[in-house]
Length: 332
Image (cartoon, rainbow, N blue to C red; front, side, top):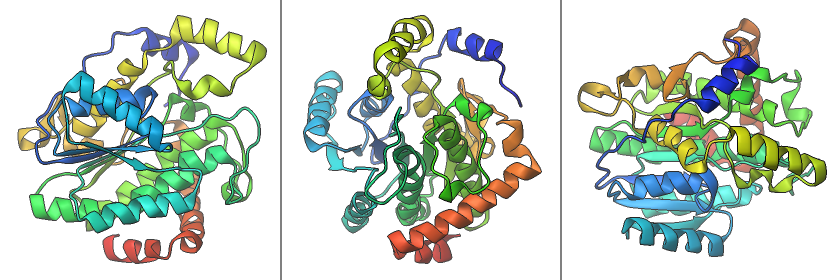
């Protein structure tokens, strides 16, 4: 599928349905980047559904605590906690996953939402371009490290845990360098394409070994968010005063897409919101619909890039956390 500017504008302007509702009693939900933007609004939605535990994964403890207090005041939910997670640091990702695994909690939904959009080249302590590490490497590492908890939950509670990775319609316009892992590129288009490729690769590997785990990528649409904080001068004027005011959805409307991706297909008989749960496996979701991703993604070249990215990512992760190799061997 190709996304034209006309189609993009049409989708941006169409009415966004309300978020689905479900009783989450006893269930555990993790929302990454939950202190601001669509992550915060998604967390509020989940807090209103009586979750057994809602974990706000935030880079900063103070801002996380402030978000927790606001959510409690607005929803009345008290089963919320903050856990520090800085996706610019592999050590922070490892520590977060270790804390969760040691807690022995069930895990029903992980919303991998945090992202950065840098206007200048920024390199993390690990030596990676910040957008690539946050949007792809650390996000994917987190998902893999949480597979044991998701698998355990699926078996013990006969349920379908969800991995929801936030991407964008930008993936339709991405161009990837063949050597993705050795060619840092601050262009967000690329990282969003890699989100889609990762979910497709992950889902294909889970389909036989852990079929109850559903991995999906979701597009919230172009939303007014704090990501534009990096813009300055004329760039900020164009984004803030033209694009945002004319086209952007509110963060709350964008968050509805994340909630839909996490809950659709979870009704009686595996169907809810008119969607069969199997249609969500490895799917790209936009406008509360399972959509065909870009022509590149479904092409032979896209499949080769998907395999290349997965293999290169595994090589990186072996040096970041030795547990990854064991998780892959045990669960894929």
